[in-house]
Structure formats: structure tokens, C-alpha cells
Length: 130
Image 1 (tube, rainbow, N blue to C red):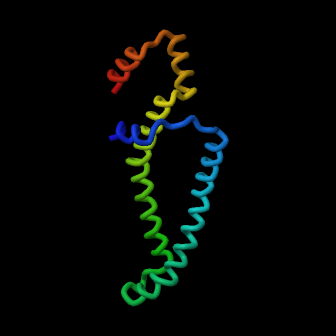
Image 2 (cartoon, one colour):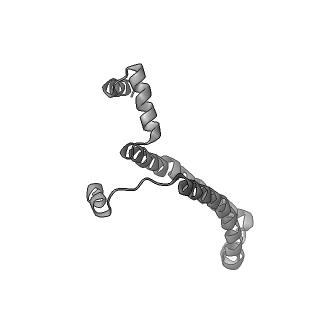
Image 3 (cartoon, rainbow, N blue to C red):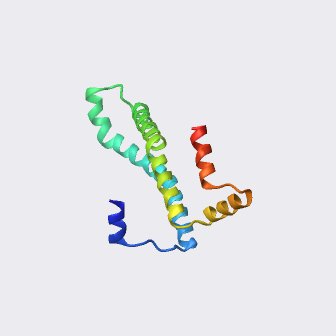
């Protein structure tokens, strides 16, 4: 499937580090702004939608219970991110590093060559430790 997609789309181009830096900064900033936005939106949803409906069915369900529910949802999402999504993303990034000849990969190969370590020896050590 990936091979077919690669043939259709073509090879990736070497990127400009300034554009990559900009995308990184915007993405990391968006996370913090997203937290603020999420908090304000949660207050609006609670006050307009949840509170009028819940007072008739669950009168004890106040703003603290609402934020407790949201906190639980966020914690479950974080656990899923840590256990499933993050490892998959790291696997993809590692594959990309090797596919596009990362400078770190080249430096690591130079170190291996200086130390006289072959890839086969390293694979054997990994199988023994795992």
C-alpha cells in the first residue's frame, strides 16, 4: 500500500529548516492556545447547554463535576496518546529518518565505523537483550 502511494505521489523533497522551524513553533504554540480555547469553550457549553438540561435530571451536576468529567476525558485521551499514537508516530519518524538520510544517521554510522561495530553485531545484541 505504501509503495503504491509512493509511486503515485512521488518522492519527498528535502525541506528548508526555517519552514520546519516555523511549523514546529506554530504547532507547539497551538497546543497551549488550544488549552485556553478548550477551557473557554467548556464554560460556554456548560452554561448554555449542559446546566439547563442537567439541573432537571441531575441537580448535583455542577461546574466542578463538568470539569471533572472533562478532566477524565482528557486523561483517557492522554493515555491513548502515550500508549498507541506516540509509539506509532515515533516509528514513522524513525522510518523517515532512515529513508531520507538524516544527518544524525550519518553521524551514527561514522561512530559505528570508528568503533568497528557492524549492523549485524548490533542486531544480535538487541535480540539477546530483548
